Image (tube, rainbow, N blue to C red; front, side, top):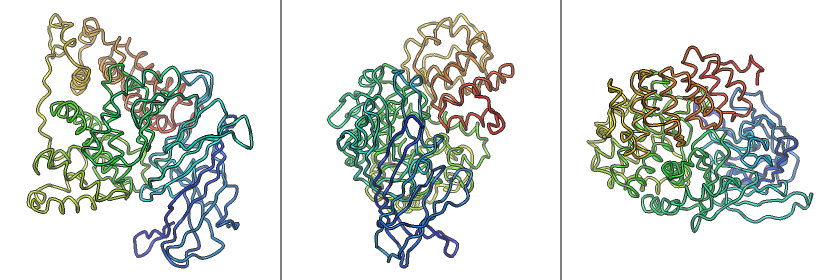
Length: 606
């Protein structure tokens, strides 16, 4: 619904509300859907609109109950196929029309992962989950699939009666499907306007446990009790976030622990955060990911990047707010510790992309670039580094958090660009403009590589440095016994930044520290990478096992890369990937294929 005028795009219409009716078909791995879009015209004599679709079968289109002509334009490699609709009448500026599209998804819809019973914890029932960020909602629902457009939604979802449906919305009751008494219809309402990438659905043999006055945790039977214990601090985190950022406007805050193939640590779907099972460490040590997703309720969901070039506005602010939550609940030292770990993650991303790669810009140009290919820790950690630098320049955490809270209030319920943010920064700190003018904005925003300023978080103090010591007798069990899991993670991260350790050293570390027995996913992934990098052949099957037993890209991609870079096992890395590709999430499989230089269009090995 946009057209070019004098070199810029003019939005002709905006979606205000979606009304979804979805029938989930596990026999064919498709959703049969009907969506009613309430669309507002933004100009006079409005008579045609374009919706985003990807691999959808369009059955019929109507406008205010009258049949409407439509056609599908040529398919773009990653944007999909525009659905061009001609209305049977004209609208004036400000008028609304209800456009109804009946459609069916493809079994290979990029937003949807269909799991067989064998791929679930319970092994008895199939499972479906969606992942719409950045631009995959169009493969599940015909819509204006842009973060610049926000709308409310209502949904009813028909599923087999032994399964449960949940969505990124408030639950609104259930009933037996009047068309088929072997099915149940679950209803949902989302009264807060949000972008299409936050529409989410899960269908499976789900159970829930109450973990707070406005929170439940959802998962399969074998996982839900572990999750209940792991995420028991959720309400405290929510209250801390509200103290920092203002009222929580979404009503419910539930957490859903997905099967292992979920590609991200978490996804901030409103009312229903998605979480990877790799967070279930048993000691709540990885729950900072939940603090991150909670923070997104303000930065990302309430104030949203207008386009994916400005993704750092979502993620940099969310990391900043996540670490402020950690500061309030733990200490300033804890925040500094997490910031140091983030800096190392940023260094690794810049090294992986290449220091001159424009995708390491804080604000990259994504012209003809698939946002999935640009995904990395850069918007998270380079964004945080800028905000931390500004905090140091402008008066400290309390002062700068005042700005962040004001920015959230100013732009709540809207979508913004970096220019909007920067203009408001200069307005808020109008008495400190001389300081802001000294910031090298071009170097921060539009220059690849590491930031122009390193944040002053000091050096990590740990009691263990023997891994680099040439005297193997100096390795003692107490070296790591006194470390928290956070410290051990950062210790291993430091070792990964250096030249590979001698094989004798990693073998001695295993003998003394027994790190192979550690099931904390953050520790285990780093340890296995260290072992493979030191050419310890016994670690290769362990690394490939972890890379395929779970699908979180933070672990899967680096583990595959390490094995691939071990010349003797390069072919084995490719073989294992191809053998497991069909069970991987679409985004994960695509990016691992690029990492391993596998042309999936030329191979049919599954």
